[in-house]
Image (cartoon, rainbow, N blue to C red; front, side):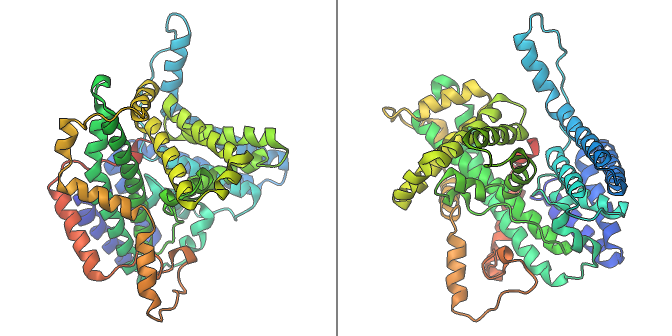
Length: 480
């Protein structure tokens, strides 16, 4: 069940919210509703998730009680091995077996295929961050199994993030969450995310699918470039829209989730891009991998090593394929170049050129991310980047470019930049509204997605109409 579905919007969500606010036992209602949400999509895999929750709860309690440093480290290592072992078995065992069979004579290993449990990459990272934070004594251990289970299973972030650390919501989780005044803001975030997902991402998706699905001999440079643009818009508005819906749902329940996107296509470098893209994942790797490895301390050689490890793992986290690994290392290479000289060149260049550089590098990277495999990605790039190729678009892609798709392209290009925030800030500047005392700065109602009610209502109605009349409603990060 995805947030952008009729079943979720008109059946699950109203029933759940009614039970959540009427029951008087909100943590219990949240846990029951989240289990039901997960079982709807995964069935028996919920027992795997419940087992991991139980093991990590017990491990954290034991680690907190241990006074000996060596024993605490041993318990932490066991918890991380368990969590990563489950992730590796379901997500990477088949890839590893296939890779080894390609280099070993006689294909000695059986081909392993598993259906990937929904959200496993996200909830695994949350479990690991909790264990490390308890080991560091950065947060007190959660003694209530009910609250700990609700934290991990909370359906707004369970399937596709953002990666919410226990410290982010600890006080809200233990409080009564009476903040019903934020329900309106929650609906506004949810509607904005729904429109991003349905009206832009879903609408441009067929163009990307068609371009990346063309036979090698049929792909033209124009089609390849249009397909890369379509996928760049699709993946951003798909994931950003889902994150906004998750943040909105959290507001409805009395929680504040961390911001996950900050207009990454407005970046002026790859370093800037990674400060804006999937921010909860970037900060996770920074705090739990890059800094423990030594960060940028210890000289250039160690900094390069640490960056390559982080971006190798970033690519691998997204998928068990060489194309994802190359995508991660590709980004890591540009971050190294910027750190060791390119940044000074960029700072001296006009801003428009810095934007163009960042967008070009990111769009080329998305080809590795989207293509079926590494060979397909390299062929696609060879056609797309050929400066001599200006062949026609092709009948199939021309057929897809109807008025609705062209409007989605235009809206995607405009709203990929902070156009909305600039407009709203200028409108709000004419009024004397004070910042909300109940929200962190990055979610201040003056700067967040707060739109007039008629605009939100019209967007909601149009998005629902599109959903009712469409069979295409994928969510890209479900496969990660």
